Amino acid sequence: MRLQGKVIIVTGSTTGIGKAIAIRCVDEGASVVLHGLEQPLGEQVLAEIGKDKASLIIEDITADGAPQRLVDRALQAFGKLDAVVNNAGMVVSSNIHTTDLAFFRKVIEVNTIAPFALIKAALPFLRKTHGCVLNIGSVNAYSGEPNLLPYSVSKGALMTMTRNLGDTLHREEGVRVNQINPGWVLTETEVVRKHEQGLPKDWYKDLPAMYAPSGRILAPAEIAAAAIYWLADESGPVSGQVVDVEQHPFIGRNPPKD
Ligand SMILES: NC(=O)c1ccc[n+]([C@@H]2O[C@H](COP(=O)([O-])OP(=O)(O)OC[C@H]3O[C@@H](n4cnc5c(N)ncnc54)[C@H](O)[C@@H]3O)[C@@H](O)[C@H]2O)c1
Image (cartoon, rainbow, N blue to C red; front, side, top):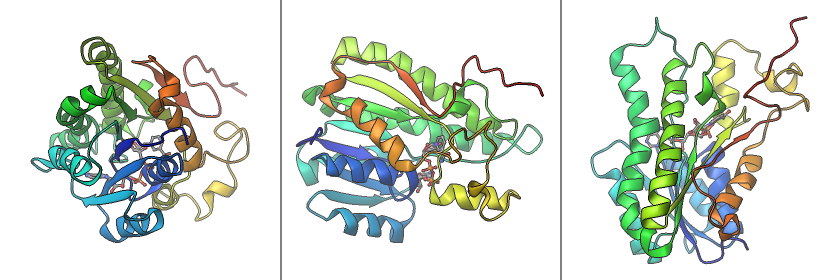
């Protein structure tokens, strides 16, 4: 019960990593505001957790006023706000040739500006509870796969925002801001995404050791386990940190050329 009594907004918690984080938060004693785009999936997560510990909002995070409505829901349903997990994201493949300006702006809007807007809306209430923010980035933040150009840029910018606000907000408002950069995670949508991009249907069962030294990629629950530390009081005053959660190093890695 490492999050006993805490109230946490988890964006993009209708599926994947966000869903796993929301479920684990409740297992650790928290109440959660669930959020995302997919109504039926959101209803399933709500039913699994139970309405006494969760409240659901289905809305595009970039809609006018959406961040404020998430904060208002936390206050209405549970009376306060202790933490925000900025997890909702567009995971989209495109390179310089297939990215037009409108698409680039959309990815930045969802993956970078929306987290900023939610932190801004939540701040007056996080200040009251000495709360915290956990941003979910990506190991693509450091450079990124060739075919993940706007996505990687959006996560790089998010990482800089985490360090900037993790400094400023901690000193000025008593609010910590940290980030997890997940590596490759086997979510329901990732299974479909990679198949649509040309990999075999069960691609995740046979992966090269270079990407999956353990023989498999990460499970959403393993990212959720890491998230709890940053949301719980046990991480103390630590702020402005970015942690890669992958099964090999990202920075400095130099794979064999054979
Ligand atoms: N799966 C991976 O391998 C992986 C790796 C690194 C980082 N991540 C990051 O983890 C987070 C979750 O990814 P996932 O793999 O679970 O993805 P997913 O596609 O399963 O889930 C994305 C969630 O975000 C929501 N969402 C997307 N766009 C939205 C919008 N405009 N408004 C509101 N909600 C929106 C969806 O409804 C869904 O709930 C993302 O930020 C992603 O970049 C994933």
